[in-house]
Image (cartoon, helix red, strand yellow):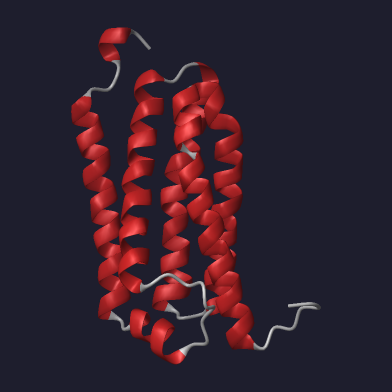
Length: 170
């Protein structure tokens, strides 16, 4: 892409507005449907589950961070990896819809776990590819991977503790 056609700060603002809207939807649904109380008051939770406020702010930060990474790849990325990375990041945003459906709307711990597991797998593929498009964006993707790994572990543990799932040694 010619330098004069590269996305500007306006596109970053659009990405951040989109990410903010998505976060508003997730947080609004979580609090309006009583999912927060359901998880923290009614379910068996792991001792290492972060408090609601910390989880919320970290989720917001991760989503806004992903929008920034998307812009970096869009603006500075190169080769076919640029388009593939942008597609994978967009797919990660869409994967949040699966988690919203399974965990927040259906209140199904198993569906929520599988949704976040798919998101984790997409994150791994993105992490492996994005560095080819833009090295700094590849480094910035690590916090997203760490966060998604933590949330996958939380979802698994919630499912295990509350559905009677028996796994040897756990």
